[in-house]
Amino acid sequence: VYVEVPGNRNEIFKKFIEKKVSGFPVVKKGTKQIIGIVTRENLLKKGDEEQIALIMNKNVITITPDTPLSECIKIMREKGYRRIPVVIDKELIGIVTIGDIVHKLLIKSTSNLKVKDIMSPVGLICWDNTPLNIIGRIMMITGSHVVLSINRNEQINGILSLTDLMKYSEIKIEEKKTILKAGSEGQEWDWETTSFLLITKGKITLPEIPLHQVMSTPCITILENASISECAMKMKKYDVDQLIVINAKNEIQGIIFDMDLLKSL
Image (cartoon, rainbow, N blue to C red):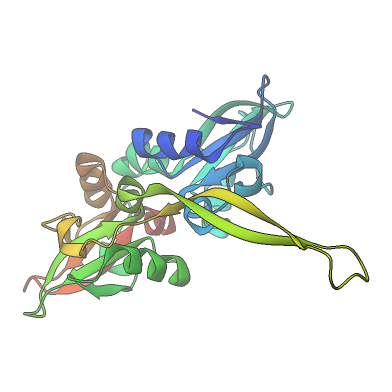
């Protein structure tokens, strides 16, 4: 799946929601020539841009069908890329995603590492009554992919991801009126002509609904001593990019992301 330029934001906005993926390669219209890549983060950070060419990331790294898998994984780890386009003579023929690595390779892992050895810190936690538009802004500023929800009883009661944010995002039309005045130069007594310029623009926004109404619950968890293959299998089973890590006392110890699993390779 890919998107074309020239093209507008509405096209990719719908695709992100329908396909539930984190990014698309961008090709020149009428060809398969790759010229960029566009992610959910690009779209949310540049919510007032309307052209795909102004939203996408033009610095795209590609591989060929002959590129060793180890090199592909190295790029993902070093650059933090979740997807790498596969090309022949600059023409797109496919894409390798971190999901492919987790679901097809790490599910068979024989690594002695445990989840606790490679997990990430918990990160962002917000009160479950925080408005979604504020949550979205916080996630963009901090670069967080998920936020955990905490209730009045100080208990973690849900999780929200960037995929969820896209699902509840909407394009809101805004109008801005600018007053333009023109008069005869050097003639103070002349009638002054006043014109109004009305600018209409669409902007991606989030509703002011509380976090607890849109979060996923209950949180999918995994024990800190679980193996890499167990973790990969659970991610595939529930179709998620991350799991909450707990200990034997059901206490939260961290979060394990699919990207963390690459550390085992």
